[in-house]
Image: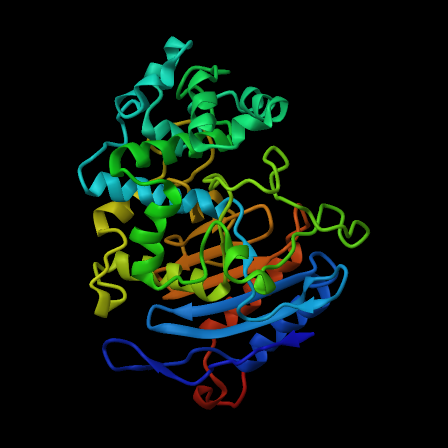
Length: 397
């Protein structure tokens, strides 16, 4: 089922005035068919796929269900989805903005900004901001989660959560190996707070979302638009259908503290805006031009996209909370492409060589992403193919 879809497949123009095709409708139809048949309903209740150029949005398609109990509600173009770990990437942007403002260095020890961080564990004095961004800090995630589960009051305020993080032991020496840990991002959010004086939700609203016009991105969308928020299905959909109260079971469902490791919600349009902002940043351009916003400078983008494995840190090829094409997980994109992703299947892919942004959002945990990749590949091919009117022999096959 295709819902609330308004394609814009007319030619656009680059800055040099040359007409460029925005996509081939037949190839886009292949992506729609895959999403309608093999993804929405089959792998996840609902999904949205949007594509854009640096110059503007091109096309958005919505499929399936945002909610299904007790009543069904379809996904719309403006449905608000949980971003899961894409949140971490936005915290990384906040950290890099602080680097640009001269308040911290990536190789600063965390204790420079949070002196109590090494309490009870001398090795934590060597944990750097880069270690936290690259998931090589050694923080004991299981220990932290156990403290939160044993006493939910430790989650009820940000200061209480920080106290747990500061008391946490290490499971290995900083920089020794790669181990994914949500706790890393929470420490980074506290470092941003110490540098800027702002909690991470306020910081991101003032320095990322509001300047870019991302009006539907927040930690608590239920406050303003509960009817637009998609429920999240559990692993095992469609056999398991009960909506989850929260993505991360460590935290209470009614928690009113922003969760920097995965608590943001957003729409396809806002993710496309973020992707377009990255394309403008890579060119050293203001975006939106009328607001005079520079999300990150080109040196800041270079830091974000630098391969941490190439710097000698353990783990796969990766940037600072972005996935790089060198990881081998973006085979249909150029070597310059990068991606942000989360456990619900959400993915934002940015390819400066192809002048391309692809945003995919879904509302299920732990599902098989093969069909998603097939649909995204078909959409990328549509963006690369000439429009029928430009094809010398008629519509492209």
